[in-house]
Image 1 (tube, helix red, strand yellow):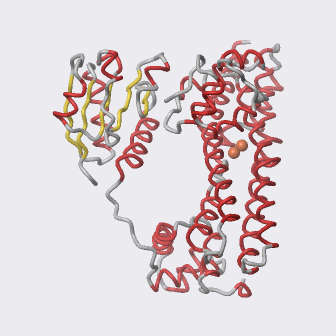
Image 2 (tube, chains in turn purple, cyan):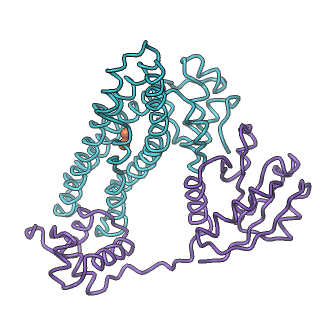
Image 3 (cartoon, rainbow over the protein chains, first blue to last red):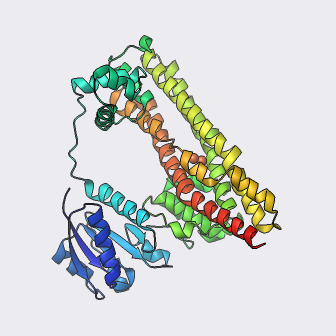
Length: 194
Length: 245
Ligand SMILES: [Fe+2]
Ligand SMILES: [Fe+2]
């Protein structure tokens, strides 16, 4: 996983530590620059720290600083919202987290945001299926369950699951009926076999 | 940029025309002149706050303020969700079906391929219809009844029986996603069908599929993240009320 550079503008020590804990528990490597005073010159700070993500408590920056944020689309601005906040402040951020949300919600939101906007380093596989995968795809398309397939090929159903996940990722097709259509189009099975 | 109550409704459409059909769900029709969002909402007797939250979550998928959304009345939400269902089954699905029928009649497209697509889409339609019917017959009426009980004098037995027979937790557990097949259908057309001599019909289908998927996504989030928790809270409140009485 790629190491993220994070700028954290939040006066509350507890909240800064909380976000760090969340990121560590997600096994997300990061370096964090922590700012616990009110920021007047945000652009300068951004030039200096070159972050991927900026967490900001809106009260920790002078109101106009948010307006003048640089139009660098690579930086993601995350508002950390404490209670009622005006829509026009919320709208300055790419995304907002409610600091009172439960842990599950927060880690899900952070995970999504890292994945979507920073792009995970998982390299894109090409869509060529291995021979084994093609075999398994055929059996799936014919309607066999993971257990059936495991027995037939002398592998555990857990291994079948792993293969199926790889097939889905490579092809961009999730459902059995979708895989069936793919298999017919690529003459892996014939429509009459169904 | 998020939408606020002082913006002109016409500007909202210019900003994001995908909101057109969302706005129609509130029975709001075109011809806004220079009226603001707030004025138009008042004219159509629509709750402005609720309207803003809905269009904003739709407009910007990263905007989803749980706390704000969970403060609305369950029936308000259910009515909106029901209108959305109606849009899927009454408008969007028939529209895509029409395009698919045109595919079947188009002699430039390999009949085997158009048949594969048509069958796949039919099975999707069945899946979606079953999903929606269940929600409309079982879940939504349950939510509405519970909200009714909150304002009536307490009928201990009735309420206890109701929550025992069915609780929102059951819905939460069996609520499946209806987007997987759509996702597949998109990729089959984009990546795997042999390229036709003329893509225009496929483009129209894809355009509709993307739009439907985006809509279903938003809809599903409201069901899972908003409807479930507010009904859970209602169940708790009712049971507490019974204890006290
Ligand atoms: Fe629904
Ligand atoms: Fe649903």
